[in-house]
Image (cartoon, rainbow, N blue to C red; front, side, top):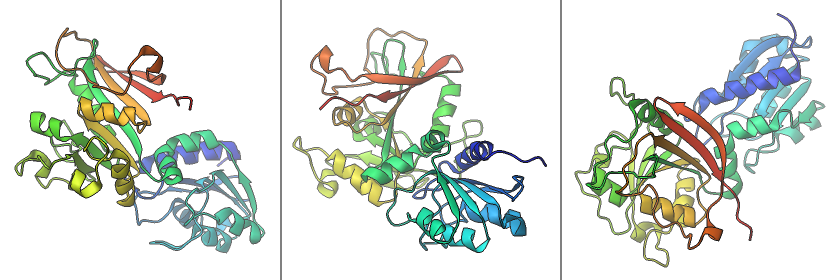
Length: 353
């Protein structure tokens, strides 16, 4: 096999890391490619699930003795602590690796320090190769670890004129089966799905990740969270069906804001404490408006159907925008056709203080 450059190896490591998306939390996704002393790929791996072997360990096992004198190319700084698995920094040292190339340093104070340990052992360490790509793939975990609450994605479905339902309240189905399948795939990448109690009362959703072709549940289910200030979720609601874990978050348990409703910042802090690193905000224009008004949404994914209703509920309620000058500006990062619909991905721009 021909030798490859460190840059090419990192590109491969970034791609490998994405295979663990949705399965590793509360740990990050990580990819690793191991090159021997001649630059030939002799091992590769990714972190597949929480508690399982880390990417570096998988790659080292494949490489065996050929790791000695070689280069480990990894998307995140190797961990330097013992948790459910041992420190990857020590494993790389024991294998005789001569050079470790890291895309992104680890912001977790519990696990960081791998680069320093490697250097102290006489191993060359290079930081920052394809850092933007690796960081983008791991954005939810990195963001969550840096600030102490989950990365929040607001997902909505609407007609071209912004309606989430018709005037009579009917909303099945605004978007196509292709779009709904895409949403279930999105649910499979997060740790929690959030909905307001109003949506639960009106639509009785399951909030599970399913394969729409045969209706089967995905192997890993996100935590279902009902934001229910006064505890109105019925005992027979489908979110309580046992298909996935469910938390009905009340103001009495989480704490109330000035409006008497669930304190959203406290809710996110508790979710982070429970291991949630990425959360999908799905149900309810009122809840979505409250999250946006508080500046707690990191990404927006909108599924827009080529339909017009002209009346009916809108996808978004009051988001704290009294005048056009206060509009929440967005940076559109992707527009992709999904069946007959469009999936629009956007990032809220930071407002000036």
